[in-house]
Amino acid sequence: MKPVVPRPLNAALVAFASVVVAACGGGLPGAPPPQDGPKDATGFSVVGFTDFPGDDERSHGLSGIAWDEGENVLWAVADKAPRLVRLVPSPGFAQWAIRDGITVSWHGRWDGEGLALAPTGGFYVADEASSQILGLDRSGAVERTVELPAHFAEARRNRSLESLSLSADGRFLFTMNEDALPADGPPADTDRGAVLRLLRVDLASDRRTERAYRTDPLFAAGRGNLGVSDIAALSETRLVVMERAWVKGVGNSVRLFTVDLADGPDVLGEPSLDGTVHALPKRLLLDLAALPDALFPQRPEEPQPARALANYEGLAVGPAFDDGTRLLFLQSDDNARSTQASRLLVLRGPVP
Image 1 (tube, rainbow, N blue to C red):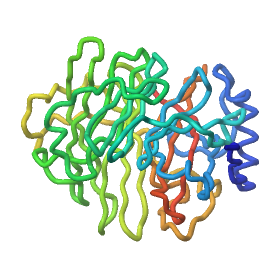
Image 2 (image 1 turned 60 degrees about the vertical axis):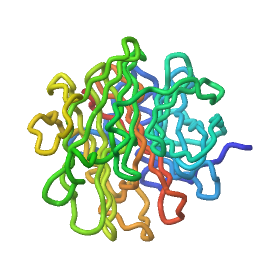
Image 3 (image 1 turned 180 degrees about the horizontal axis):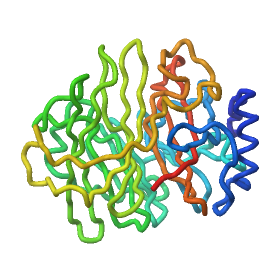
Image 4 (image 1 turned 90 degrees about the horizontal axis):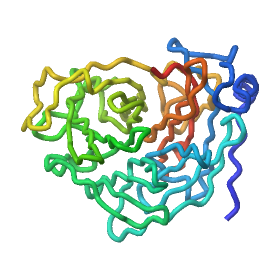
């Protein structure tokens, strides 16, 4: 199948992207930082984005993503079909194309939501349908499963594993439940957030540890939900956490936070986290609603508080630069609906 050509970017974004690409030296690490272009209060700039065509079935249901530095591509897992697709960037990372990838050897219900690239070239996939983490080889065959604490099997329906990440050395695997387990309290509402369990698995020793994580409250009243849709490891203890919310008739809220597991106690043995005071402190890294509206198309069929917003479910950390900035990749899940966008967004900014 031929690569899909992304939809053209709007004029404002093309003009801005050309500045960023030039400043990035084609997106290569070590290039100087962008000198101008809109930034939000946290210093992030929009390198580019691609809304993938809805008539390509490979663009539907993309959830977890993982950056493959060796191949210079992003891998994305589909949540309804057992497959991984490749997302290939243009020089400078401003535009992307979908290409065929790997079919996962899997029989039965599939709900691939999180993805991590193993140092061996294989993958780890978080399957929400079975609340399992699967280890795949490069051909897509399941080589192993990673055992999780028993309480993850008690997750609310369709609110189980949504996130997955691996430390750069390949030793520590991270995941967390999307929404609070019944024993840990209610889902988030407009008055309070939900308490989740952030799990770290030491693949070398097989040791497991957990930290309590509290989400923000739901951002607007109405029928909706809020949870963690993905995470990205920065080190053996530090992560970026993506909180994604949706309220009917209003749209999404997507905020990125940083946390450090060293800042909280291990709660693995706690039967309930309801009312816990041990949640990790978190720092706001970026609120996507702050990104400039002028850079993004208006989608009247999809109500949103800001044009940059969509149903983002995939997060990955990309190349780092000498000035201390690095790339962040975010992928939205269109739920196979024409009213929603399958969007890959590329940002550059200070990721501590």
